[in-house]
Image 1 (cartoon, rainbow, N blue to C red):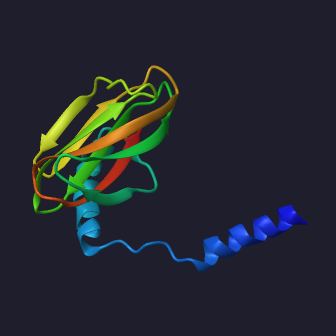
Image 2 (cartoon, one colour; image 1 turned 30 degrees about the horizontal axis):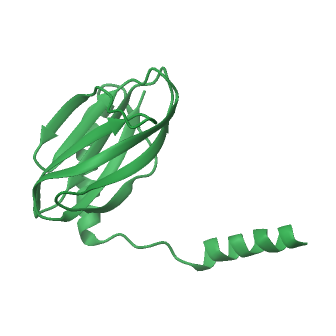
Length: 143
């Protein structure tokens, strides 16, 4: 009975509490990010459903955990809005060691690509390199 009540409450909370709406700045950041990720589609990469949006501040970073599989190749694409002027993306393994990536930087757009040798959890770091706090969006592509 207790288990059924917990399931019901979980469903009730999931249905009745609306998800946070994205701000206009986050929507604009996602548009720029999808433009960048589209370039990798030309090389056979598929854009993963879903995205992550948030705020990035100077001297701080956003960290997102992802599960990746050995044998696949990945590109993590990030876009930001004014007043953020330059953004960077880095990837770390589960021990916190930065992995070597192929990088692309174009001011408020950046990407990092690599093929993991081991399946597992990785962490994508979005850093504001230049400018003031702004919104960002991250999507990733795989093949």
